[in-house]
Image (tube, rainbow, N blue to C red):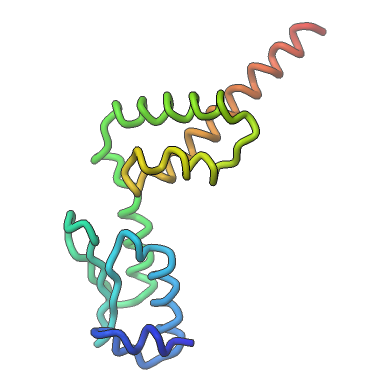
Amino acid sequence: MGGAAASRTGDETSAPAEAQALDALRLAWGTTWDIGGGDDRWRAARRDGTGHVMTRASVNGLALALRISHVRYRDWKSADLDRARAAVGEWRDANPEGTREQMLAALGPRFHPDYAIVLRGVLFAVDRNRARAVTAQMTAGC
């Protein structure tokens, strides 16, 4: 099971659990990060060349660092969020029964790859606000 991870250059993992954890990290983050391990150090470097290389002493530490680095609000501009709100609202108007996966497929390419979590959150907020508006109309009519 861990043989595929252990056979890659720079991934001399001895424990099957570590190789399995490395495979899981690559599955979750591999499109954005080049992830490797060995010699008691784990590393991740952004594939687009931006940012720094993260190194941690454990695979769990690297997983935590990846999750933390995933949401870097200070790098985002309010105009990006406004653009996401407008795009998601327009998409929801055109696709009232659409799923979040469909929304991400349609809108994701227009935003940074790490922005998917924000788009899902905006979709939730749009749906919640519209549900509140419907509920308010129903209770006002009683």
